[in-house]
Image 1: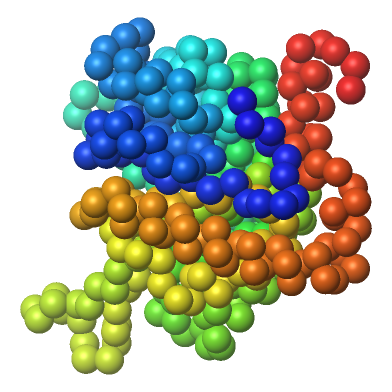
Image 2: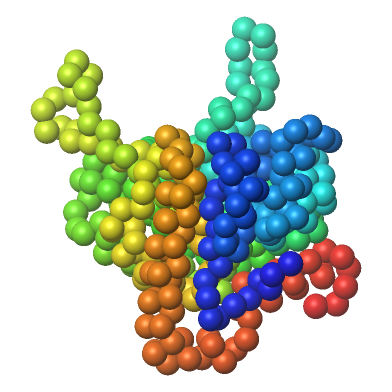
Length: 346
């Protein structure tokens, strides 16, 4: 198993999706890890799990979930958590993650009240109540998995308004509090930050979206960050007949993971590596999946940008201090959380 801590190179991986199963196993390209969606491999056996085990023989695996619904007031689905725990035990992944979102909720219909799953990454309000719920569920997951968990910031297309006498946290303070209170790590999706900054213009926000993203990164505590995601997005304009008045709504940016990383996101990623150091980085591509060589080319581009960013980082006093400190706080925190879960002294 490759070491989790490195200061000379940034670990790079790609999302390993079904169209590339055979080709990747045949050619075994130079990658530091592969990421798969956890829910695709639930169950005691089958062809998908057999392929994953073949990949695990050559690469560390990062398990990335989309269905835990960590922010749901209805609680976690015990079956889902059990399936994830069994997969973690079987694969021994290098990292395990899901999103700061909700999907499960109580629904009262003609058949009576029942818990339903929206099969989406719906945003949660950045309220104290939502933070308490999220923290409780992250602790539950970490206790069950006996390891440190990662939580990702999400792209969103609606906003929660505060209730009377309620003050909402900023997203960065909310995530910092989550990590500090639970010991979890943060998975920073750089593309999601940019998508949200562009969509904020629909709500009348002014200013440079890229600068907003740089400021966002500057407000995240570096010791919490354990992985970065890079992906593409698309611009969707309203169609004639949508009932939208001219100039009322120009376009909405959708986080579709269906194209190359745009120049602005590369710029933001450069800043992220300068701030956080050699954090494991993933290229995500989930729709209109291209040839494997395209993903590998994006990973090579990420490696080039990261190398330049690390060089710039090491020329600063902050970077020099980080280099002398050994493994990152995020990595040491993972070990401490695991030892605590096993009842061992820190």
